Length: 160
Length: 102
Image 1 (cartoon, rainbow over the protein chains, first blue to last red):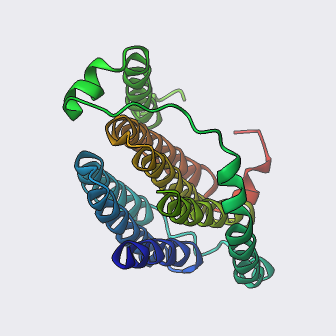
Image 2: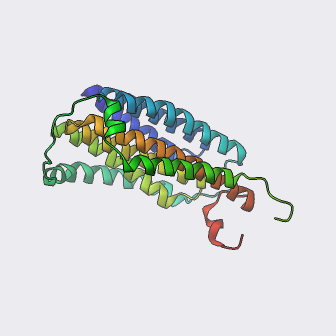
């Protein structure tokens, strides 16, 4: 429990750092560390496949994509962030945490207990046999992503 | 089990709120996207924690894997759009996107 709590605190801390840090490269790296911690939390919840996906895809691939984008742009150094927003953020966050701690337990008790039967079978069975329509949706989303990236990076014709 | 569930939900709500605040307050496009990623982390933690609390880890895990795959597709598309915006406006400031004329 203590390990899990400290992992969760680290996750929130690195995510907040990713938001607050001015240097985008440091922000991207701290986002990757947060993903790594989330992956470890998944492993500790006996969700090894989700953990592997989180660490390899989110902490690896998405960080690489972020760093590539930061390298291709000039880090947005000309963008002037609002100073007031940066100053208000810690206050907002602390107030939210206090409200969260006070209200969340009451909210949880209002959720009706859904009947849940114990699961059987392997992860592969649940992943492939338990779902039908959303797999089609997932394939459509991936194809849409591929086509949109292709369309956005296509070579322009001369008359464009 | 409710105590563990409470702990996870508490932290995922904190993540989502921090992401939402940054989404509202920041002006750099890449920073806005980092905020979306933080929200996505909160949502995936929420999904898996609920599955864990209800003894349905496998279904929750399948959902999280689907979510991560879709997230990657979203990230690739959005970062390509950000690079194109940068080429057009030479800036990452979201306030410069007020004009519709390309």
